[in-house]
Length: 565
Image (tube, rainbow, N blue to C red; front, side):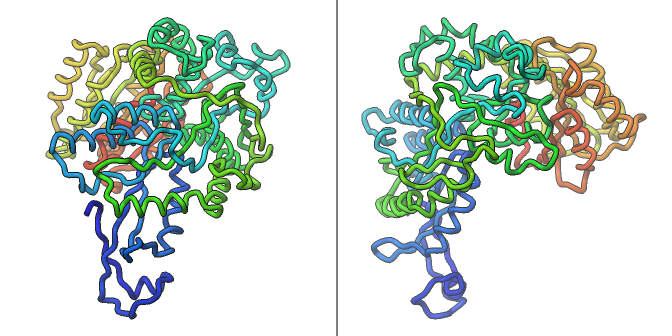
């Protein structure tokens, strides 16, 4: 039987509300664990829904008890994981009872649902392992909107095509003479791993072509790619998470980003969590938009056993029950079951409209979506110039350096053809940068840099950060995302400059300047081995962020970071 069997104390079960068993804390009753793999838009929903379901002590018709656990990832990552597992099973590398196979899947929108159907169909023609969209029950939905500061919202409310308007505008006043002269800084997530980013990209193609998405063809993608590239040139930051993008808009204000393509639920959350004095935001509903349908996908596949299917159906019924649907509404998601009241979240105070008017867009064909993603990666994506600052001081000896080298190797190998890197090694001294482009020759130079890293010397962290900023200011790439990534495992021990002076220097290329150089810091190892506060201060000055990268997570941290630019 697939999925982990868990043993739980009957005594503890009684305390948790179970009944019908003797109170014996040493007796273990086995149960079936059902894995849910959901898109990240349902992260908070999952965290509250799962314990509520499990507290009911659910069981199958034969008396077998089961519990559920929910993992949330970016929607593109969900599709990739399911396809990879299916491919491994097809090739005989894993068995159908492998516990990593999810029983129930939810994606944050129908475009990725179509992609999952197509990719599984390529592996197993005619098997129909993934049910069609029309036969998959809806859990919740959240339409795509433009998140803008309240003071400029009126300038976009009656606009037929927001993307066409921002193409020729530098400020909101260029769109509406009555609006304040706030600059337009546009943000969206990366479409390769995020559902909102993919829906944004498809919408851009639909708007510039004048065609509904389902009527677009592969030749259309090539024809309209230059116009989409012009829209993408307005992007000031990409990202992997729609929620974190919206939260950063609130945190750093409209000079960091003044318009974001996000879910309606992200606008509600942003306004609910805003502190006094922070900018309030409004959702602008396009004339036509994707509704981000989040469905309960139960595969008709050999890796879902009859017991798991029975358990999953109970979960689906619970997800669509009125109390659970009301939970979704409290979290800013629109209920997937008709008749469930929206509740108090959908009000102008939270920047949204309870009954907005818009046309719902439908997905393009999977081959068109594939062409769009390829065109975005190779042509349309806004280019970047990133300085990567690498600590190879003596404390990096052994497995630490090897893990960092592997992560850097992958990072360099994955840069796009229009992206550029400057690689700076530092320990006691700060080396001159090695500049590379995203072509084959540049990647070979980058890999040589990685191979030549040696763990020795002390840590001139602040000097290295300053050197990166100085080089990038002198070599700023116009019409590109310019940023600095700092990877270190230690506290500064030998810099000439101190942290307060460094912060003053970093502000000179901050969000209120035309340079807009952001800093992203990664503390490698265990907190306590370096100064996370210093790394946080360096990162947040200009709208970046700090992350902890342990040996087992550093590769994922670097991969996620790469999606920012």
